[in-house]
Length: 367
Image (cartoon, rainbow, N blue to C red; front, top):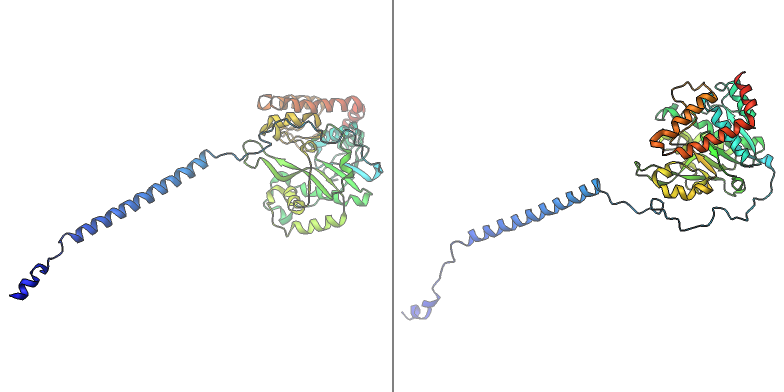
């Protein structure tokens, strides 16, 4: 009795019977919250990815956003290149088909008109170039120089069909055997607008202009260079080394010698200003930049429009003056006349050449 009186208030009381139900409910709530958080996080990630994919934030580029705030000329106004033997310098182009004979002639004549004192040497493939094409080349001052065909590596696998001849360009490194210490190479689809003799005195072994891609190409203003204009010191030893390494090096084969040269010289090349290889893609991408460069352009490179080629004709065909007139007219009207001024530059250079050398060139057509 006494025991019961003393400990009655400590009688065991069972715990509530719904505790397990409450715990389960809390676990369910936690799981639901976690799923909701994960869902929201995943949704936010997907929305962010979609936004970047469809509405990317453009990386700032000072060239895409060009402003004319610097009036300094590319070259000092009182600069004059050191006097050196013109026999040891050369302006070089290439001729792989008759269809480019007139274009190459305009390159040579425009270089001489810009008062370059260098030799004009024109490497060509002997089995492809006619007597008429060589005659036209000589008429404007080129020294035609037959070179061997350099086949693309890997038996041409992976190369764009238009570029299968382009490794032959590497022959220009052998021109040390012609007594040339320094040369400037110009593709046959270029045009000289101003003198560029300062390039011959560069101490660098290799120099080129960075490439530019249009507004539809995300590469934009690239650090890789375009191989249409090159300033270099020829070396037969370098030529042998390059030919050997075209077979073993890893690079995009489709772009032929330009891709290889970017690999071979990319880390050691001097990047030249755009005025030495003025690609009209600049105008497409940044019209204000093109406008700012125009007065100082040394060399124009007709990559986007070629006012001297009829792609429907055989590469063995040399266009007549009448045919060229029509080709340039059509080229000036392309893309609603966007490149009409640049086409006009080439047409004017062609007309000056014909005024100066027309009788000799017409005689070549009759051969």
